[in-house]
Every structure is written in structure tokens, then in C-alpha cells.
Length: 177
Image 1 (cartoon, one colour):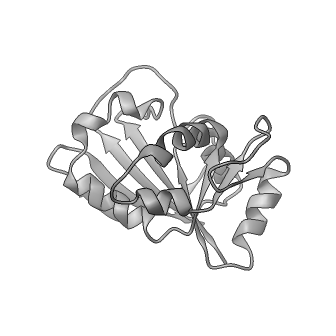
Image 2 (spheres, helix red, strand yellow):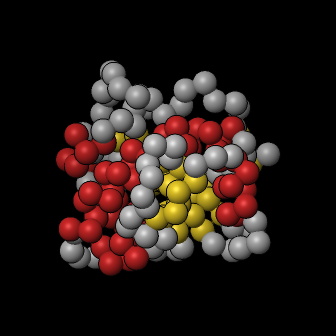
């Protein structure tokens, strides 16, 4: 059975919106190592439309570590608006839960979700996320889209916790029953 892992940048008050505006002062080698540990075992990306559009606009222009792998990796994109898949993408347009369940079945692939809050919350409510990688930043934003919004209860088991020298909590949880 395949596995879905979600990687999420969060402010201390749970905001996930526009991390590019607040997360970079906290980026360091410890966070880079954490991201490598999440990214490199992954076989494909599973993304919402907004995250996909941002990534597809940026990543093909990026050079350096991980860029070739990111660009070559298959992408499964949940969208009802986009029509022409690019950047090695396949669109999931209908029956999201059914289609994502099919992706997981009959494979040992790991699918990685970056950002894509609505997608993660939808999959979370159907117990389709296996692992969560939270990077909780020591900043209170006070406004913005929060990650946790009207979810069904989800129990998690802490697998790993580390605090970077800049105060970011690097947390890995496994979904539990």
C-alpha cells in the first residue's frame, strides 16, 4: 500500500498561508536536512491547484540540489479549473477521495504533499494521510489561512521532534487510529 506524507510550514498560531513571506528568516541547514529526509524518499507529488501553479512557475527555472528531481517527479494535481497538464502532471478532476485511494492501492509509492491546505484537510478527514511533517515557526502572524479548520478528529502519534537553533519545531507524526 502506498503512503501519503504531508509537509507543512506553520506559524506558531497555525497559519500556513504565504509561508514565503515569513518563513525564510528561519531557514537553515537543520530545516534543509529535514526537508531532504521528507523529499528524497518520495516518488511523486500530490498537490492542490494553487500550490501546483506556484511550483510549476518557479521550479523549472531553479538550478541546484533537488531541482532535477523535483522537475522530473510525477505530479498528481487536484483541480477542476486547469485543462492542460504541464510539468509532468496528471490532473485529478473528479472523485478526489476515490482517485487518491486508487493511487495508494497496489503500490508502494510515497506521495508527498507540499502546502495544499484544502487538499490535506480533505484527505485528513478520510484518513488518507499517513504521515505529517510540520515545521512550526516561532512567529505569531495573527491572521491568514489556518491549517486546522473544522476537521474531523485525527489522532496522531509523535515519531520525532527536534528544535532548530533558530527555534523552529520540526515534528513528524504518524496518523494513528
